[in-house]
Image (cartoon, rainbow, N blue to C red; front, side, top):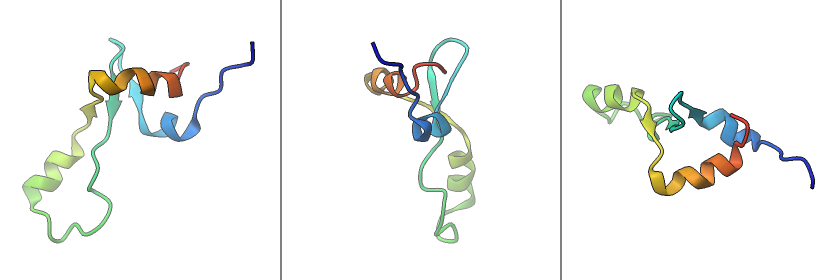
Length: 65
């Protein structure tokens, strides 16, 4: 069987927590920030968790993390 390779793009975007959940960062925080409120930008700083429906696909992309 061939070696499993980590998808490097996914490895840079997702991290696995100690309990096995997948952590992600929020979108909409790259540009056009002047139109967004301070509260909105503050909440975008917080990381979120990948939904259970998507977790299996993400763990396939990052098998060793």
